[in-house]
Length: 71
Image (cartoon, rainbow, N blue to C red; front, side, top):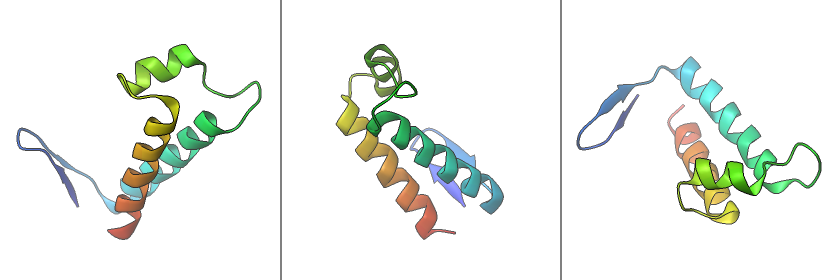
């Protein structure tokens, strides 16, 4: 499978896609769950590049779902 942008194509094998899905799922948990492991607002600002916590979590969930659909 390839992730394609008009300027860039990145080959991604199934094993890599599965690992990426796991990473995305973990990031969503760190965004949504309260507690000491929750990402700080500063971390969200850097990772989200302008997206708020909820928007970033939604983007990550959507990307994970899209990758899962291709596995």
